[in-house]
Length: 127
Image (cartoon, rainbow, N blue to C red; front, side, top):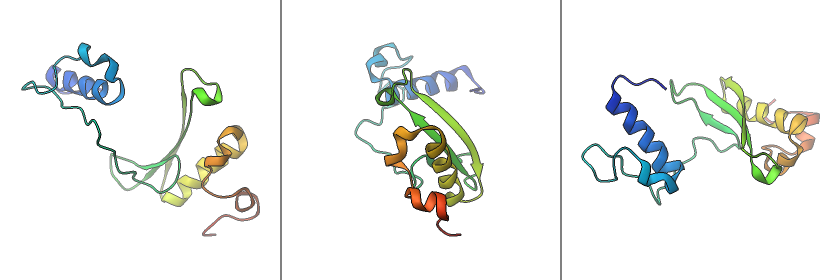
């Protein structure tokens, strides 16, 4: 991303390193606890923004719902692959888009589908 200052860019990189690549923490720009450093959120679990798999709030406006499907090493993707499906006006519409992608292209994720196969093919929940 783009940041207004070099310091803010460095802090963003450090936050990513501490949260997603802890093995590289020694390579961060600032150590945890430094005046400019970002303390890692170790042991803090983020609260999901949606009850549905693959769905989260759009952080920009908070009004739309983002749908994406992530497949990783357990399904043979190395590096992992994230497929962005788009923004949707409702949480349910985003969940249905995730299921459409799972049933059509990622059968290994069917156990994580938001709705059972029968509802996917016969009629959607909330219709």
